[in-house]
Length: 287
DNA sequence: AAGAGGCCCTGATAGC
DNA sequence: TGCTATCAGGGCCTCT
Image 1 (cartoon, rainbow, N blue to C red):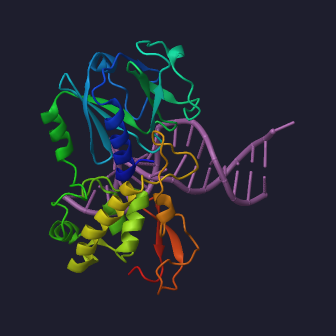
Image 2 (cartoon, rainbow, N blue to C red; image 1 turned 90 degrees about the horizontal axis):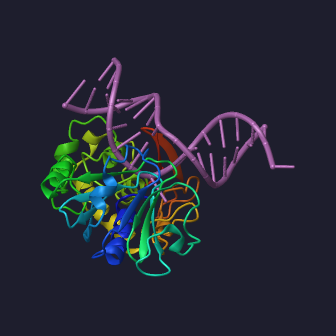
Image 3 (cartoon, rainbow, N blue to C red; image 1 turned 30 degrees about the vertical axis):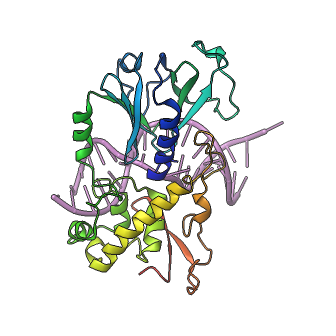
């Protein structure tokens, strides 16, 4: 579920529900995520208060009272669940309510608070967690990333100068976290549709006007997705209680063979593999 | 340097 | 109560 809007939704819920709470216990049931869960991960977290839950790109950043930051990336299939405790000050596993939403398998990490526990679930294990020593190091880590779409740095001049001379297609650039941070496979297609740009168009063929469209439309799509609670595809995607609604607003994603939704367009939505990821676009209005 | 492709992993679904 | 192939919201690595 994890592109920028979905991670932001998780961040908002987490910030609301665990900020100010103290971590009592951490259990790592499976250290083999995308990267090995670092040695001592549990000890870095234990007895720390959650100061704030932030986000950069698709990364969740839990700011701890010991100045360290717990970084979480959900990969392709990672989800976070909060389970309430029956009674306070009881940390044993059996003291927690059974949650019908909590998956039976792939609950790799459990973080216990007094009255609830946070569960990191990830069937494919493409996600990972890390501990960053301090805020300076976190800044350094994200410095090599491209700007977020909401940043003033992501403007048409930046886009135009980045793409000129580039042979690679624009769809791949939207997924390239060195160019722009936080956009994934769904929203890349949706943004290009709104901008009326063909996903296979080479970077160097985008004119100033199209770059301006990308600047604006990226913000429009992502903000709208956040406002609607993100996208929940494939049945259950309970983002801490809530389900997203943006999937109802998809104009092209998973709409192969259907009519273009633009009122004056008679095009058909096509699906094409670009750089090993599926891309959806209208064969008529995207140039 | 830029771009293409492989790979990490499990589960849902389509087709036989 | 089949099997097998394909595909899935990400991103790192290697090779050319």
